[in-house]
Image (cartoon, rainbow, N blue to C red; front, side, top):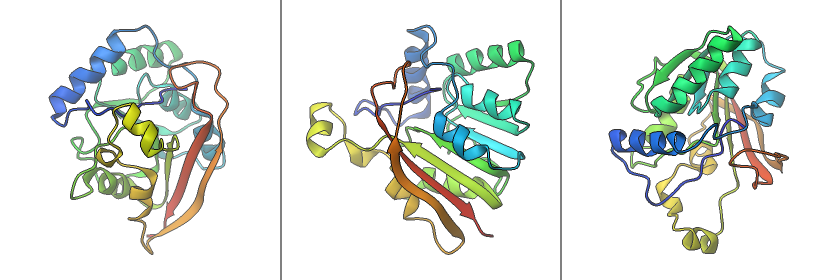
Length: 216
């Protein structure tokens, strides 16, 4: 998989500190993820007509590169410059074009209604009182476009406590789904098996999948 991020109670809120945290994580290893596109993205995007796509938290770029090779015009953003440098190198080797954006989702201030597919695969997004991250995701989707949010099932309260995670700090699928009003049609909302043999997220066995289409 391209990435399978794990929330942590040590996740800072200052953008510069968040960037430093993720740069350290990438710099401390070789290729962090498997280099293969996420299976849910592949299965869900194959039935869509290639147009403009946004890859949120693109990591080392496997999803963005796959989309570009399928004919999508791809913008991919990540807070880690280390990860983006690896992604850009792969793009050069594979002779594909991706617009790499070095920013967080909220900080990127993306043009509204600009993407026919917004893909957020296992994102680590901090919750705010104003639901800034969720609104940024929804605003980015063009009328008729698709939001695809994929994550791991949240741990139980006991598991979260044992791992030092405060689940209230992070945006979950329920937070996104709660903001989908009559302007949206939910096409998929389910948990499905996950089969991954390598990469940092290989121990996860299920995916929570939310696919919603913007009506207008």
